[in-house]
Amino acid sequence: MIGRRPYHAAIPVLLLLTVTGCAAERSVATTVKPQASAARQDVRDRGPDCLSGETTSPRTTSPGPGAAPAPPGPAPPNASRIVADVLKRSVWAPGTLPVPPLPSNPDRSVSSVTLSVVSSRAEAPEYENLMLPGSTVEAFSCSVVPPELTGKRIEAVATLAGDTRATRWWVSEIRVLP
Image (cartoon, rainbow, N blue to C red):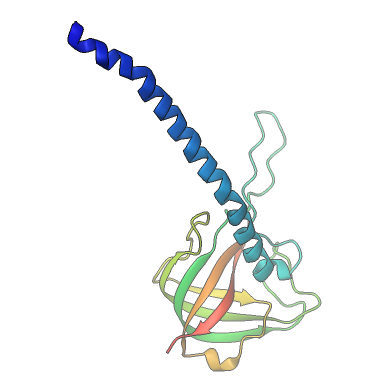
């Protein structure tokens, strides 16, 4: 019994250290959150928001029993840093962008590239990496994509936008690799 007494006395100290450690972890997470929202805003600025109504905002919660059906769930916050081969480049004239019910391009031309994805990773820890290596996708851009990209290997940021009805890939920060 006498040998156990020091351990019993140490328990309150260990509990205090554990609680202090948890508080320290929480304060670190709090300081990271403003950077995450700044990164999320950066993806919105360069991605699908060039056409009104198409975003990568977080999912909404579903209603309870007996309530009206939930609106379509948006794509989760995502951004993938990809390496891909450009197979084809297209330009969509104003008003011709496909895939209703997503917003169209009534007043501007939009470029697209068909990509064969070689590798991908999440652009930031708070984003999901939804671009699968080995996939072939058409990704859109409100910026002009030069025709010289066809046949080149690029690095870029790809973002999936839309909701449970339809989605569209958007590409930005395109850089030709040697």
